[in-house]
Image (cartoon, rainbow, N blue to C red):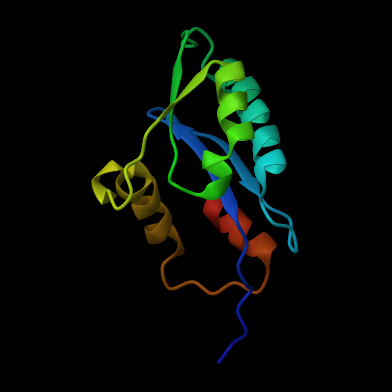
Length: 127
């Protein structure tokens, strides 16, 4: 039996045209509203750069029900940045686009592979 590389949190921002931002939370850190707010600002800058000409008055966000997504500070920042958050009813698997459009390709790429470090996992996932 081999020791696993461990787990770490990855935040992925994507739209119908592909992945825009991937953030790997540093080890021994916990995602909180402050950290997530910084990701939202990064995302807006990257989105404007990569989707030049597609920036509209309202960007719709579909979050899950994680506490960092539901925090008042997050809701205020989304409004400030011009994003609108769609309600995600609990226990609604049919409203999780990542499960159908993002994760299957990633799972196929990583299937049956073993990694000894986070760097190996990141390199394989980004490929």
